[in-house]
Structure formats: structure tokens, C-alpha cells
Length: 417
Image (cartoon, rainbow, N blue to C red; front, side, top):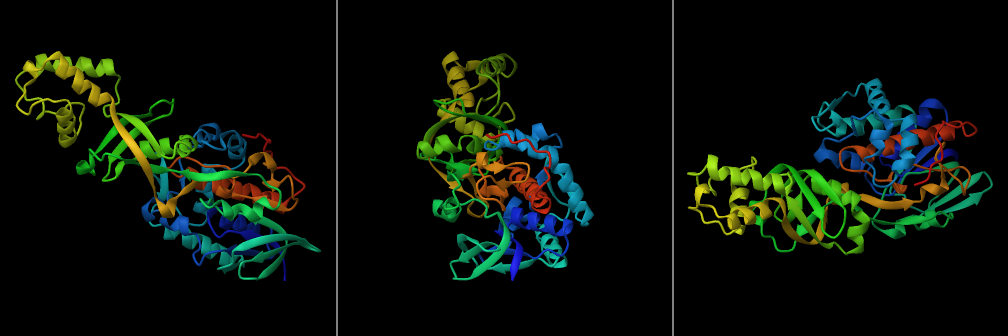
């Protein structure tokens, strides 16, 4: 059989692109090839098994700001297809999404299988063929388009290809794409947590603060938001977001660096002023027993301990030196980071196919006609919070439109990052 389209990759972007194409062009012979035995594996595990489908931002420019790589290109792409379109599409399949306080969107079922089953049912209804355990290793030009060879020595013939293999920390996974002539930005991890080499706070694991400020020392890189202490170091949305924006720098320094944590999220002058005020308004209270800034009791005690404040010390007796030391630890606790921890099943890759070689109106290769790209295989990655799935849905949709109507532009300007 000669397929009209072979989608390489049975993940979010691959399924979405295949379904969008099959819906707009019924009767096409479409095949999805997945190298593993699992389909939609990232969709299944994302959001702790709830599937963080997207983020509730309709404005294309605001949405694009959440992508360390791909922001400028995505501004144009999101004008064509964004979170509102995704919400409407799932609603048309009787899958309702809900918005949480931080803007993340999940199925109302709080079960990722709702999304997985939606895709599998649509693929079945649209007669999209699926083969697992087929890892593409070579693409050749054939008489009718392309011949794809797999590591199992299978051969498939197709008129067009949609490459949606996702990200990989293994540069070798991109070799067959590179052989087509495409530049591959070296893949490195994004979205990870920081390992504290000294583990001074490891016994406080599970404690969090709602609005910390984290700075990577000797750089301008910083993040702000909820921070979680773990048994290996630092985690939480603020850390994971910072890891995305700092991915290249942290890779270059082999994940050995210092970070400064401001636990209270206020400038040093404001912190010191509030501590000095406590000498008057809380003069008879013990310092270590009465946390300020709504900090958890055990974290406050640890910061007092590091500031050499005795457990029976009262505010009225606090010296200026003690106030200054406590202020320093509240707004500038330094962690010596030695390594990272990546959520193995939910990893995101910084790197991939260079966007300057893609026609963003159609997601078609500028180098090889009839080859299209979608999803994380591209040099696009976002912060945590549904942004990486949103770019998968958007690029999958635009690719499907380009494949369906190759002579017509979707109106996306070609802006390279």
C-alpha cells in the first residue's frame, strides 16, 4: 500500500495532526508509526496522570511569552490556532476541560485516559492505521514519494511524511532527520529540579512557600513563584520554570552552580524594616517560636538557627547583628547545586529541528518538499503548565492544514527565532 501520509510518532502532536487531516480530508490512507509499544505515553502521565491539556491564555502574544525556545514563531502560529481552539475541539468531542486557579487546564474527569481514549476513538472512527514497535531509521526518495525503513527491517511507502517524534535526550534519535539535510539544535534537558549538594534542608522535605524568588548567581536568570523543599534539593513551579529559561546555561556549567533563594519574596530593605518593627510590636515574643512572612514554623526555625539566634531569644533583645543575619538568610539563602533531577516520563527537550528551515505557514520542510514537522521534535519548548502540549496541538493542526491544502497558506508569517 502507498499511504497518503505516514505520521512518525504516536504522541500528542502526531495523533492530533493525523486526526485533523483525516477529519478535513476523509478517505486518505493515513498510518501512524510509533517506535515503542505505548501510544500517547506522555499524555497519559502528564499532570500526575490528570493530563495538563493546555493553559487558559487566549491572547497569542501572551501565550507565546511562556516559551524559552520558539516564542517569536509561536506568536504567528497562535494567531491561527491557540488554547481557545483546543478547548472548542475537545468540547466537540464531548470532553470538557476545566481551569484551575493557576491557569492550567485539565479534563473535568481529572483522568488523562479521558484524553487518550478520545484520541484513540477518533483515530479508529477515522480509520487511521496504527503500528507500534516500528522505529524509523532511514528515509529515501521513492517513485511515489518516500520509502521509510525501520529498525525491524520493515518498509513503508508514502506520498507525504509528518515527523512528530517528540523530544529525546539522545542526539542519535535525530540522525535520520539530520540525513534529510536538517540542522538539529543539540538536544538537552529542560524542566527539571535542582539537587542541593549539601542537603542542609533535606529534613524539611515537603515544606513549601507560595512566593519565593530564585536567582542563579553570576547571571541575570531568575524565577518567582511557589517553591518546594525536597529530600534532594529544590523543586516546585518556580524552580521548574527557571530550569526551562536557564536550560542552555545550566547544561554548559554541567549543572554545578549556586542559587540564591529569597523565601519571602520582598526586597532586603523591606524585610529588614519589618524585622526591626518586630523589636517594638513583638518585643516579649520569642523570635524562633513566632514566624513572620507566613513562613512555615520549621523553615523559620531553620533560618533562625542558621542566623545563630538562640531559641530563648526575644525580639526586644535582638541585636542589629542578629537582625541583619536573619534578614540575610530570609532573602539570600545560598544553595550549592550539584546536579538535577528530571521527571523521566515527562521530560521536555530543549533542542531539535531548526525553525529557520520550516515554512511556518504549513510546517513543511523548506529543504524536502512533502515532509512536515510538528511538536517537540522542533526547536520549541515551553514552561510547565500545559504549554508544551499547546505547541503540539498548534503545530499538529497547522501541519494538517498544510498537508490538506499544500498550495494555500494558513496566514502564518515566517518569523525565525
